[in-house]
Image (cartoon, rainbow, N blue to C red; front, side, top):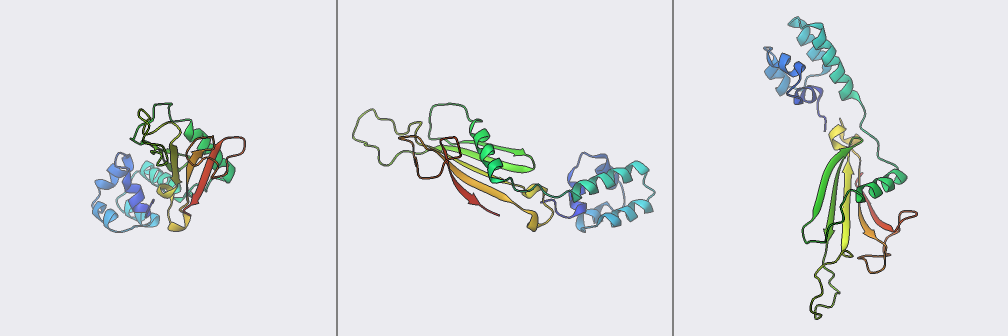
Length: 190
């Protein structure tokens, strides 16, 4: 979460604004107390800060005031799922999970592809693999927590994804995205 304005502003330790405030006698208080924008302006006016520092402070304040990104619609989430599945290369199945984390449109996403051994597979046949490309499932979750100022703005969604193809794990158990054979079991956190 963004937290208080003073903590949000001082999070970027490479900015000119951060460097200027660190050189001031009140810099320790800026960390320990959740100062508001108006308080920081008064403190900077008291030390005769240059105009460009006030401009940087105002820009940071406007960035802090920006609302968190809204939850994508059902259609947008379906399109995201299809795009996320295309990110995984066609590699042979393994017992290790393939994972990816990234940020897109203000939402932080975590995607995992797992291959799980089929418990119903006949183990008496020699040479049968433990896992095949049909034993795949995906876990996708996304949330806007990092761009929220309050808990009321926090939104997130998640789902399990399966292939609705004959012989695939959980085939036909969950409805497909329209026009595809990608079945989705939806969860919604908020």
